Image 1 (tube, rainbow, N blue to C red):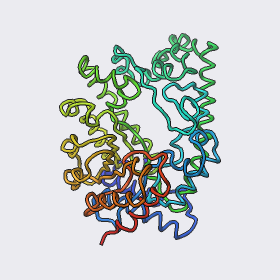
Image 2 (tube, one colour):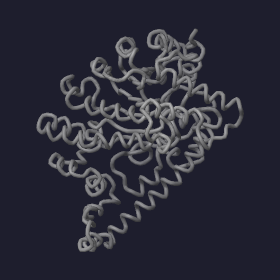
Image 3 (cartoon, rainbow, N blue to C red):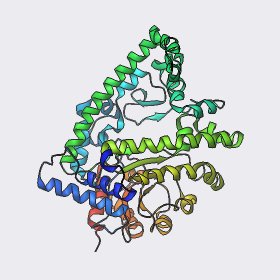
Image 4 (spheres, helix red, strand yellow):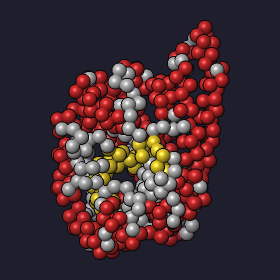
Length: 444
């Protein structure tokens, strides 16, 4: 893929990426009908991204752990029992037939986290009940006085400071020297000394064991996803990255820490965000190139209404997020930006983007206003409430979907999906959401 894209314009790169997604290499469809259905689904998504009117409104729920609950297994089992995971994801896709789906690898390999003594999250059966989703453990994993260390060399910071704090098994990594110490032969022996220490060797052995678990996990989930794709169902997201502000605010400084930094050391915060921006672009690009899928998922956390003022958003959040979005677009990719929470106060700001190059998925945002402001700029997606799918009736779900299609789906450029991740929804409600959209959301 990289060789073919070299020297192409952004538009040509995008068409190459869409072509790869439409006709994926190494995929042998189970039938001509499956191939036709797959290409129709990808084309439907491509049309709405480019603000064309498709045959009908595309529909998918952001499923989270719903496949597990639907299949009658616990969230913990999906992280430890490969066969049950495969069974649950296939059952969900084949029974509900969404236009696109999220891959089966998202829940992660529980055993690998155990080996590392991973402290950043609690997960089902390991800090949370067996049938619940993961929970982030909020803390300052980067101290307020460590900005210069991060800015100087982010990878070194991750290796020798951040990883020892979030993984108990990797705590000995803080004894390592910087890789640059190997620049000349006289310095190299001193650099190598920590690798001979028993505790450092044990840390690397833990990392190797976790890597083996992760590799096995990826082989299993890749085989599962390949079988689903070969049956005619595309995976929506080909890569992942983050807003630079969130990279700092989510798992480094934490919410409290970064909010204080906006007042106490704003210049350092801005310098660090700028330093991380090209790394976030590369993160999204490398994953998309590897998968052959143009859609790059970007979940937004700290920029929602209520977290900061519009003035702060324009200063600290939007400029580098926009730079990431444009960096991905220039590489022929489609950012799928998930505006978690409400983004009603941000709509006028975020419309400053190229036409027909992005998907904005909204959670609690007013979809009529989003359509009015962004409708001629970006594909919008949303926003069936998870609470509605969990507690209400199929008829109420259909009524909500009808309103969304009438308002946000007018003239195309709209994907009907859940506002947030769906875990324990009623199956009949999820089915009503998908089936009704396929019936009612037809154009022309």
